[in-house]
Image (cartoon, rainbow, N blue to C red):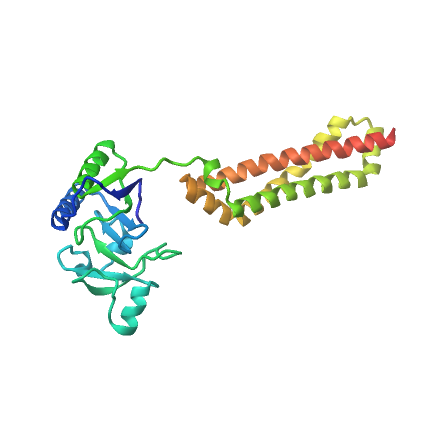
Length: 295
């Protein structure tokens, strides 16, 4: 598992030359710096760049990379591993070649990279320093400002401009998401149905409410008793609903960076409070409607 703490975006610098030898040397200096400071790195190409993942695993922090054959982790071996389920993996298995590899590289095996090629075109993995850096998204497992400045300087030597994307707010990350919108629509409909159901139940309990009133119970006492009785069903129902919405929670936590546990807790607490308020309102409306009928 790779504990990425910072994302950086690399774009080709307009001021940099196209000296691949110089850029490769700077890339190897970057690899030595990261190794010396125990920092791991992952880069995936974007757009028309090389369809590759470049990695630097320090301290056994990238599980799949540390499981690669030694030659696939050596920047001097000119050996790459193709990504499972990619076009190159199929070509290599069926025909023994991988035409999308960089010139002069051979295939050292097939690797399964979690999350790779889900709607993407990544083909192979290479150790940092095997080829010059290319435009793409970079993830490093450090957030130390001094280290990030030094890493950015090394990226600049590799002919890359570096930017750090701003974190999106929760609202911005969910705006326009049809899956989230449909889920929220069903949530609203469920609360409306619950409100109508509770009001109907209170109407059906007209005789019971009338008896309680004869023995001196006030409307507030009746309402409080009903709400107390509903606490356990509310908590159980919200918990079941939160478990069933695990897919939505995963989507939300993945986009906001708050983590699945925090997202689950937030969904459960907010769902409990919201459902309790709706139930209390429905009980009050149902009891009040019975009072008006009795009058």
